[in-house]
Length: 359
Image 1 (cartoon, rainbow, N blue to C red):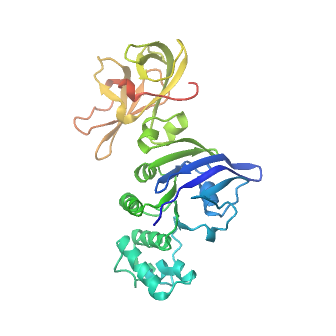
Image 2: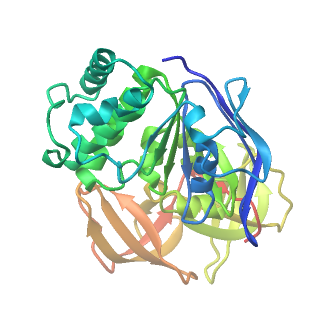
Image 3: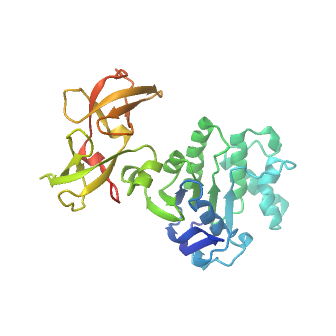
């Protein structure tokens, strides 16, 4: 397969009085996989349908490689698509399902059967060509759908919630498998999902969407560790949100912050932004970055409300002084801190991420 870039240039879309997409631009590199992540109604599916040709943008243009495909119908865009429900033909065998696109293109039977066999081997279903669809598990059906999407050598692969119908364990294993196939083929891919773990696991970059626009895009670790605002921090995993007033910069580049609340507590955060003394700030600390210490140590006073065992880690829910919402800490399963224990919470300054907007 030949990898080609994809470019969206200022595309927008309205349905009546509802603007589903604000003017949106996105460049996807050749061979790159980008995840469009966001809640229902954020515009990710409208973006995918516009790329596929199922929706006509009100403004802007869509380029696949050097070619403007904005006005082209779906069948002329050279795309492969995998949907959540797979849309396999129950009256056809596995091999016939995979070869269907080639048959519609008039490819000779021997050639399409050979190509279908090659793709079934790629997805580890080499011996399943004669099986009926109803004889397959959900994961096997998903692989058939993927093979069918790839058999025509598409320039772009579109994945619309492709693993949503699978159970948790199978979904996790298929994330790695699908990603490995995408990398091996080097095909430019767009993944639409509302599953944060899926987006982080499978993509080269994550584009977090809200209200018809991309609010942050970057490598998975960047978007997770350095969310730009409260929406991204809250949507992409769990985040503990703090507010306070900037006090003064330290020699090491951190800032001292007086936390809001009834207890006079100072904390430190790391930011490149020049703050003014007394400026209100909001910042986030991920649960795995919060540290539980003894009650006579430094930090924010808290009390353990609940402890939940999650196998490889414990989730602590804590009530902190001056807060109306609980804090969450992910900790080791060794020597758990009992419920009702008084503790102190701290974090390293570089684990506190300043968020855009006021507290």
